[in-house]
Length: 94
Image 1 (cartoon, rainbow, N blue to C red):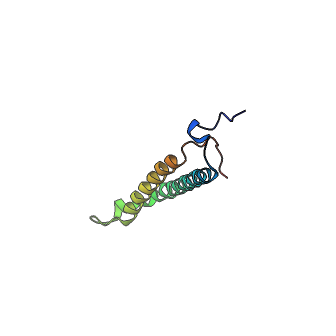
Image 2: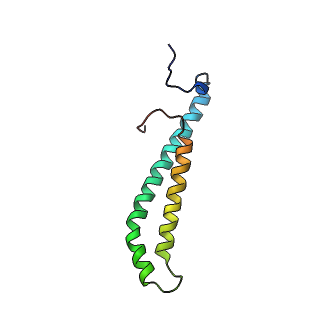
Image 3: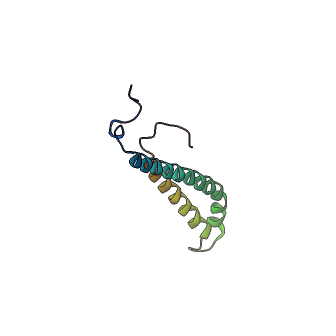
């Protein structure tokens, strides 16, 4: 009996195509991990960003800029990682 959990478009693939899909999904999992880690660091860095925005003169706020950059990296890694992992039926990583 056929495995009905596999999407219809993936049921008749060659082994090379299956390897390519697995590599794409592993790369997506990696980007999800990187996105989560940068989100954690950005959340911790928010404490210093408030101090930087309060005490630094003018437009000189390097910690706040770094924090904004971290959140942008986190968001982009999350979206790209989710897009690369599409079609994966498993919850856990390998």
